[in-house]
Figure 1 (tube, rainbow, N blue to C red):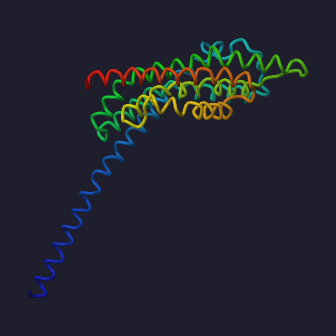
Figure 2 (figure 1 turned 90 degrees about the horizontal axis):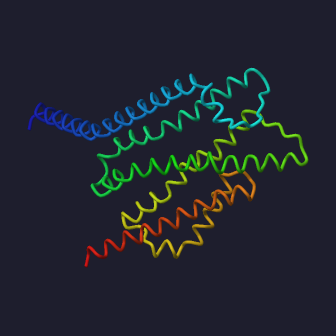
Figure 3 (figure 1 turned 135 degrees about the horizontal axis):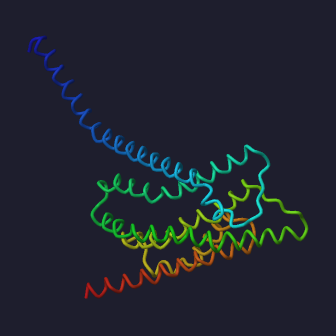
Length: 256
């Protein structure tokens, strides 16, 4: 083989190698572009919600403050409070849309079994998320807030700033939207064969201890609020056991 033929063969090999590398990079670039689209759509959704929430501050503020006696320490704190509050609410309202965008991104990479479960669970996840927010807003926040305020008024003159109030409100509402997803997570683990009712009963005491630690981390540092927070988490865990047992009975009947 002449030097010219060897040179041509080397060039052909390089071209093939380059084409192979480009073919391997193509799926990765497609995923990156799809993820970029999800991020852009999510950001646009948050911005649109923020504009609507900020423009209607006079309407929703009484529902947020709930008649609490809160103060601001300066003119800049007013606008900062409105911006932070509108930002937090807009993110909360955007979560269902962001989850839908993520679902569209992950769907091609899921097997049919996982796809069917997530698709059928989306309405339940949304309902549980809203139920968690409502529980935090109407139960945990007012009970814990006024309990702590009344406790402090025995020995102090309590002045609550707008920033502190909003931080406490978010702390006692947003986590419950995620906590109430516990049944969906457990059902998914059972659906893919990683968890069953017998295992859940066996590890119940360890789960309760873990939930107690989680409550101590995310909730205000008082026993009263911890009890209010821990109760629905335990109830949700027990409901999950009941749901899994029913599902296992149906599967057993079908097998018979």
